[in-house]
Image 1 (cartoon, rainbow, N blue to C red):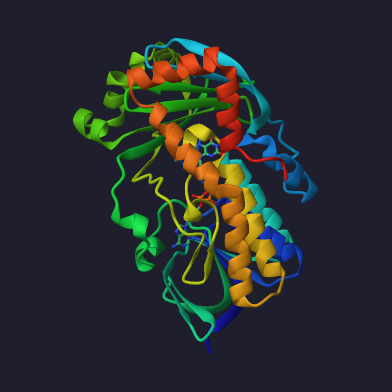
Image 2: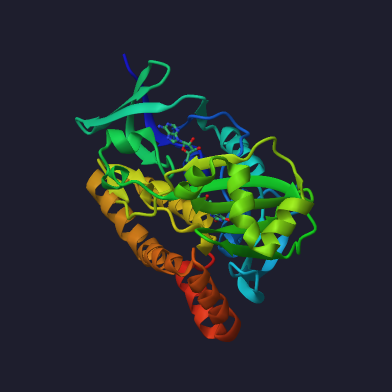
Length: 369
Ligand SMILES: Cc1cc2nc3c(=O)[nH]c(=O)nc-3n(C[C@H](O)[C@H](O)[C@H](O)COP(=O)(O)OP(=O)(O)OC[C@H]3O[C@@H](n4cnc5c(N)ncnc54)[C@H](O)[C@@H]3O)c2cc1C
């Protein structure tokens, strides 16, 4: 007989961990399946918009034990290094995913959630109003509801033949933790030809340095250090950071094929949450807040105990209302980056037309919930 679960969450990033916590809190049977083993590092800028703070605190999901840098300004430099700083109305805080995800998984276990780690979901089928999942350890299980929180790109996207997976993406992501003399109250975005690099403080006096770069440039220069020296260091702020900071990882975390194409929030009856439903461009700095809110929406939809079509419809409606415009604006704003001309234009805009900057930030960020 197949092992059977009421709710299965695939992927234990922020979307999956929040959904798991909320379902378990209401006494629901929930299994979270994460292919990696906690704690682990991920490519992510680790600046979290304050729109999630009230929710996390109310749910007891804010890691109070850590003293977290509070970030209230945004510094932007163009490819030549000219820089400007503006206040961030809502602001945010810095926290590594290594700490945050591990904290949330422990909270889920405390509430009674079952967690499989180091196991991947290989196949998923929907038949007779149930999901059948095949796992990488050879086992199979059955689930009534499935939340797909498997991130930007997963084996399951191929299994489900999702449209975006056919398209190649020119972007790579690279991340380090460093110790550096930076403004710990600012999130900085330094442009370079073909991409941009974010820097902000995180816990324990450390900082996150994470950039979105180009696969073609990596191919041209042959290695990450050579590409960084040839391309990123042309921006004097990045040269200073790379040459005077202490790098805490032996080697960077790297991902490729970062795709910003639109995706569907419900596919094959799976409620897609977080990056599985669409990744916002990192320069908007709120993909994590969106993943947290989407995890909450997916759990809330299931908790209504309505029929499957009603759950799917209400989740999709709410998801589109809250996230669809933000994702579109994020894709458009991304066009302002990656070349000398566009980054200088963007810097001038931020410096001299603060009204427009505020509007862009407002349209790519949500409200506290
Ligand atoms: C370069 C870069 C910088 C960024 N910087 C920021 C930032 O500063 N601030 C911000 O708010 N956002 C940022 N983001 C966006 C943010 O990282 C994501 O939006 C957020 O992590 C999404 O969370 P998630 O839970 O949807 O996915 P993830 O955190 O990616 O989690 C998905 C999980 O699913 C697991 N998984 C995948 N397939 C399977 C499977 N078949 N079976 C089991 N498990 C599976 C993966 O191992 C992973 O742990 C950045 C993104 C990039 C690319």
